[in-house]
Length: 182
Image 1: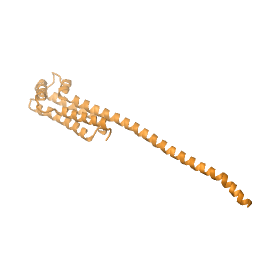
Image 2: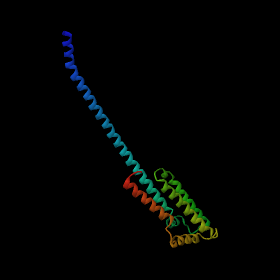
Image 3: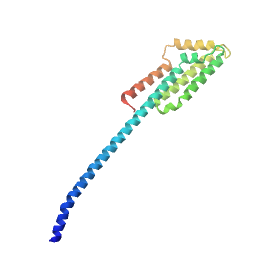
Image 4: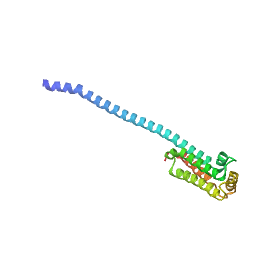
């Protein structure tokens, strides 16, 4: 009986210790899991904020690009009275392409719709300048091309490609700010 009493005494002291150890283990485990999830969520939210900022900057750059290739602002930047039609036409094309290439990396952050719209606007503006330029003598003074492009833009009944692109960009930014990244 002496052995039975010893075992019983041992169980009396060991069992509460095992229960305390098991409950402590479960509490610490649950705490660590919840703390890890909380930290992961905080990191995810920080990453979302960084991504949102990068995307907004990209949309800003796309809007700026579209504004810069708008014929009204582009012509006044590249026009030089000593140029010929051919030189002005070339300057317009080169400037639009350079502006576009400067913003190529932004396609990572904007939607496919916005990127395709921006690419199309670039092509339409180049095509418009070349189309109008072909109707003039290449060695004519650049002021003729300048006047025809501005006349075309000012007297057009439809929205310009740059205005349409800006509306699309603004709508996407509104959606992004309202609903977050999609």
